[in-house]
Length: 443
Ligand code: PMP
Image (cartoon, rainbow, N blue to C red; front, top):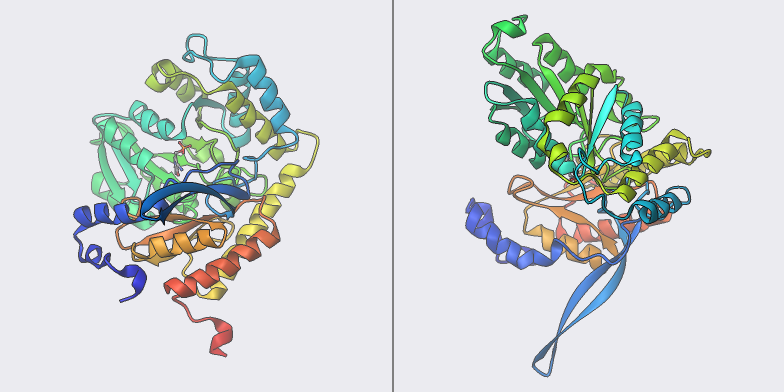
């Protein structure tokens, strides 16, 4: 009935394929908008404007300066940094943008070796290996760790890179209900008896795969309970910390630190450099034996060009800032700031009556829109009022669980956050997505 739903109603009737394609044609501009600046707390969004001038269609572009609520720039390292940027520029001059070589040939610079040692020390594992892309880290590593005859038990809401890695492995895949240790146990019990030794069961190997912060939910993993169940059934654990490493925990060491889990209890720790560290690439941290095995056998290590040296330098420098090894306490300040910003923004959104998913301390906070037809109205109105938001829809979420996914950064000022809250509140009223009564209004 509402104006912004016009024409989109049929997608609610379950005619997913045909209508989602039609929907995307109508809301194309809400996705993949070009950006003309660094993904810092404010960004320049390029808007394409079509005007009908005397029946001739004219297309121009306009730069719209917006508060950036969409990038994974959790600690603000995506912008020029007084410690990181000069070192990155120096590494660019010394090594060039590319190694033009795979790791086992000429693609291992001094920087790669230093970064791997530093990552291992930072996450609390004996060794680490880096890859050129976070997505590939999951999709290429899982098939090396497990294959036919193995069993992968995966959280229903795991990232697409995990899903594709699991499918490519040839292992049997079972899913457990999102973040539910009791359902994980049920699934494990269906497959093996409790206490059965690894050598006497139908699976060569069992790996349980979870995420530290779920990227579309903003929710923390129930890691201590998941680990307890996995250990009980002698299954290995694989933890994707893309959104949690660097972003949460007192010293930025992710979900393990926040929830008091010993990293030794997680067999494989995976993470990406594209979020808290403001770089690109991914890593696996594990025992020396596993890392050595990956170095000898993983095709993405042997056949793919290594991480770009300036990107590696950015990883080294940002971790040093987080650890305070740059000689300042900026790292600790950034960590305190992201926690404060995230908790402030989440509680203000909730007070306004929005349905916000996720946990305290998590910088990822989805605002539920539900009906995908609300995406264009929400996204375009926020943009018009200089706030850039990311909207997420099918197939990244179930069809009728569309949402706007806010990512908070340590570099947002209180003014940025208050401005954004005012805009989101106005747009929320317009689109009709305040589902909970506001306390003051009740009184
Ligand atoms: N794992 C998770 C949980 C992710 O959310 C993402 C992407 N955001 C990736 C892996 C892939 O990482 P990248 O974007 O660095 O390739």
